[in-house]
Image (cartoon, rainbow, N blue to C red):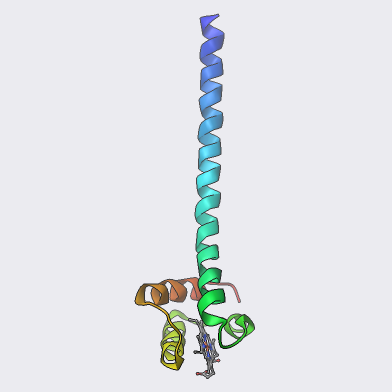
Amino acid sequence: MIHTKKIKAVFFWNVVMFLLLAFAASFTACTATDRGSKIINHKCARCHSTKRIYAYKRSKAEWQDIIERMKRHGAKIGKEEIGFLVEYLSAKKK
Ligand code: HEC
């Protein structure tokens, strides 16, 4: 009797750990994309369509230049958000 209980407990915790890991993985994968598109939809799409942003693949240095230029045009974007977008956009495939 005790033996089966133990097996059940081990099985239970394996399932719990698996679900936690799956949840954590999907959560981190999701937030980076969500955050990137959220900032872009809220702060960049005010002046032009996002098509203009996703049209070309560019390097980090190019994104840095462009986003700073957008700031001069009037984009309300913080330093930390610029850093995030540079990483996010340069990592994007096309
Ligand atoms: C205040 C208005 C405004 C906002 C907000 C804005 N842009 Fe722009 N954007 C422009 C204007 C005007 C141009 C065309 C002139 C130019 O390229 O500098 C442009 C052009 C662009 C281009 C094409 C540049 C090229 O060299 O091909 C990209 C890419 C771009 N914006 C990305 C962004 C991103 C990313 C954001 C958000 C951080 C953003 N824009 C927010 C006004 C804005």
